[in-house]
Image 1 (cartoon, rainbow, N blue to C red):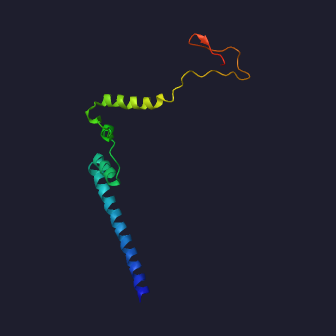
Image 2 (cartoon, rainbow, N blue to C red):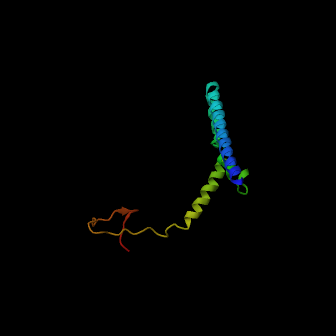
Image 3 (cartoon, rainbow, N blue to C red):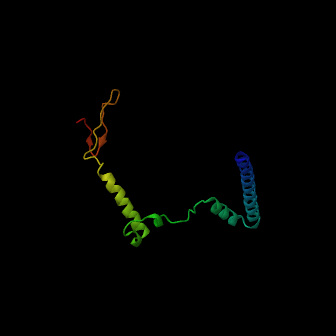
Length: 121
C-alpha cells in the first residue's frame, strides 16, 4: 500500500512540476513579447532585471570601502590607488640595471646606453 502511494505521489509531483514549468515559461514568453511590442528599451531593461544581470551604470567608487575614501575626489582616489600599486612594485625594483650578456653569434659591438657601452660585469 505504501509503495502504491509513493508511486502515485511521484507521478503527481512530476505532473505538477511539468505544469508549473510550462506555466512559468508561457508567462515569461508572453511578458517579454508584450514588452517588445510596447517599448523595446524597457523590454531589455526588464529582461536584464528578470535574469539577474547587474547594471553597469554603478560607479566603481561606490565599491571601494577604505577609510577616508569617501572624502576624496575621483581623481585623488585614483592617485591614492596608483601610489599604493606603485609602492608594492618598489620592493621589486632592481638596484642597478642588468648587464647585457653576449651570446654566440651576437655582434661584438655593444649598444650605447646613457653615453657608455654596456659591458659584462
